Length: 83
Image (tube, rainbow, N blue to C red; front, side, top):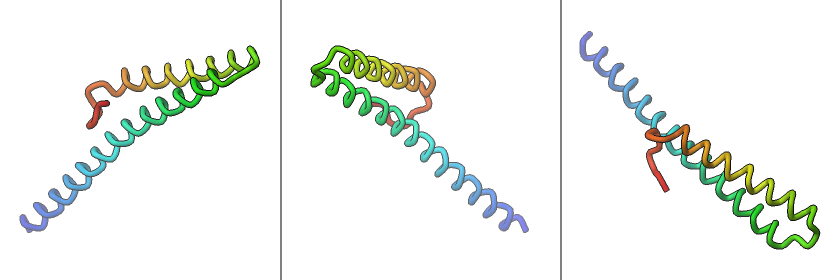
């Protein structure tokens, strides 16, 4: 009986450990996605000919940069990988 309980507890611990790693990686991937989007919009802003298009692209880049900064702030100390 005790062995069965121990095995169940170990399996539960292993599942939660795996879930924690996945969530930490997902936090990192989310911030990476935000940074990628920011870079793409910065390139679009640089390539824009019309002022209106440039302003829109710069605003989008700023929005994604804010998402990235907010994500880093919210995930601080919780990320498995930082960079």
